[in-house]
Length: 89
Image (cartoon, one colour):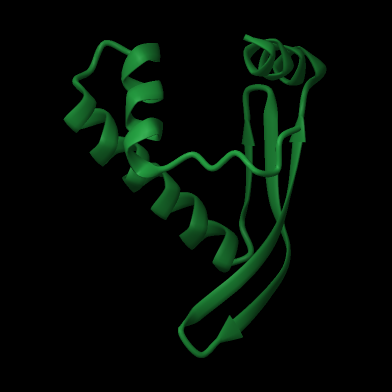
């Protein structure tokens, strides 16, 4: 895991577009909307159970300019192996 690597909005849109049959501009809007849905759900104490991953909020703290949500991602082994292989390339 590389802690120094930062994925920006444009790179996220490129990755989503590369994995789907949608344009980069549509991928940008869809990925940002999905992230907003996840944040809102975690903020409301909901969890996500999706294929290969489970996401749940552990703690939430309201801050002056927003909030901080500590979440746990449980990823199946097949997914983490794919991610490690992608990092090696």
